[in-house]
Length: 225
Image 1 (cartoon, rainbow, N blue to C red):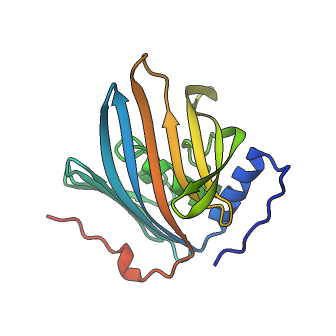
Image 2 (cartoon, rainbow, N blue to C red):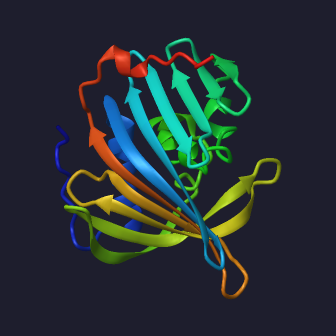
């Protein structure tokens, strides 16, 4: 169980976000299921499904991302390394310690940025790049329901940071829904500039669980032949 944090009315959007970051950084375990909806052009959209399992000590991690086309990417982690299996290639890529962060950061595009959302918070000390890492909330747009939960709706901008210069690029709107009691994230919407009459929007929804009891079996994955 999470100990509820008390927010005061005058606390800023930035303070709410920092509470959420602190909560994820302190979790012993985490689990979710979720959906990504990518809307582009005048009316087109794609939908993908995913699930995440995480244990801090000993370290275990599993992100199972499934595309509507039937493709699939599975990222697993253990105390020695991270491993990435991609159905489209049939290959497993190894990321042994200490250079293991590429398993998460290099799979941002193939997983429609799922790998660089919640995992960047769970491994907050690694300072991994991602939309939530560079999020600058400008306003709390009030409380909104996320299913049966009540959430703060934080609005602002995020960007990518060009490594060699530190310059912000790919600036886009970001909206994050953070549950008022647990400070877990239930939804993230990214919207990039697009031509009139078109969309370039990704909505990632989560059903999160804080500190669940996870059996070792949930982290076991054998790539299909």
